[in-house]
Length: 304
Ligand code: TA6
Image 1: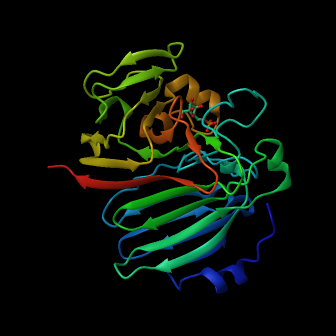
Image 2: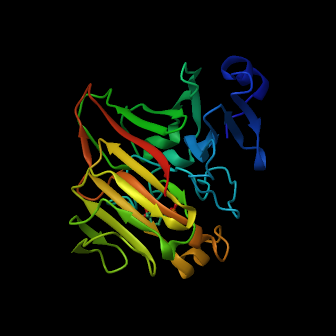
């Protein structure tokens, strides 16, 4: 992790009590945000948002109690940035799963206290020589975030090269829920999906998505807003997106969670990933001089 002078970065980008840089677990550079509308925290490594809680609500974004803070590895939970491919690399099995951006060094471009009380910031992936082995292209990556009663995340890829590039990506968001056995995901009824726990077979979603075991699905050709309906917490989490036609739904369940080693024995019960992606056949070709933005807005509403 590049050396970071916390005092100087607070001088340059801190916003009094609204946005502060601190040293967290294992010396991770953390960004702590607190405004009248919400609180949030991020690691500078991977530009990984770890927590988001709108005022008056329990945390919406989930962070494992057993999360490990290891340089060069994403933290279990929050919103890992999967880029410039999703899942295993299409031809190089030794390349890092979900790309390299989520474990790399990022830098701060801007921070701002907005007139409506929200806090915005933009982070940029630092290009290092070792990335060239995976990705020999000139494609600056920025993540713009607005923390308020909603959480807005915009992942922007620009192609400064002379040839077209093809990217896969996802905002791999972990949501906090009461109990995976009692929630359902609305919005995907009728969508085709690849069932990764059944050999990648293509299937058709009928009705809400419910959970009774390991679930790992890539929903195809869908730009639908998804809703996590959580009666146990008397709330709905809303996930609306643009620049994405694939949505990944994942819960590792008992055995896979135990194998991951950073979710504890029961963590799987209280998390659910609904990932806004460009995955499977939904990869994006970016022409020279062009850009692509994967944008998501998260909201929460109380039931009843
Ligand atoms: O998005 C679902 C998934 O691809 C699962 O197959 C599982 O591997 C998950 O991502 C977590 O991956 P990670 O590399 O963060 O442990």
